[in-house]
Image 1 (cartoon, helix red, strand yellow):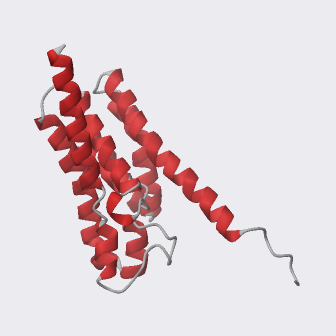
Image 2 (image 1 turned 90 degrees about the horizontal axis):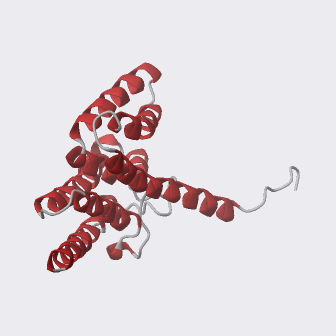
Length: 202
């Protein structure tokens, strides 16, 4: 019983710390220095891709690094905390939740893709290296980073299945479902914002 309470308490502390870490609005902080509001320009997503489109690739590098580090550090904290393997995944997932619904940015965050990637670097490094390599190759061949990134993300659980137990692959799937939910929410929001199409000639 004491062991169970200790694990639950440890998991709760790690999850809260990881959520707060994920809540740090890196993209907002970087964009604010140039007087840009990512929520009212571009695709209105406070993340790396929108920052790169509006600020330029070089200016957006801190966003890329910061969002990846949030996931990696959170997952690292989870693993260092000891206990069951899933504490690391709970920490990575909590950081993703923090990035998506940040406490320090009125709960309006990004889609958690880079934070997910950072967590995966710590939780399953070999599948991550394989998928990053695939991302680089496909991006070069197609001349589109978007296609490379999509391929890497969707292929990740299948690659991981060749190295890790099914339970860990399922945990990865649960983390990925949050990304899917954020994309769905963004699509619904964009549809509501745009409203019905205006008839031609009106």
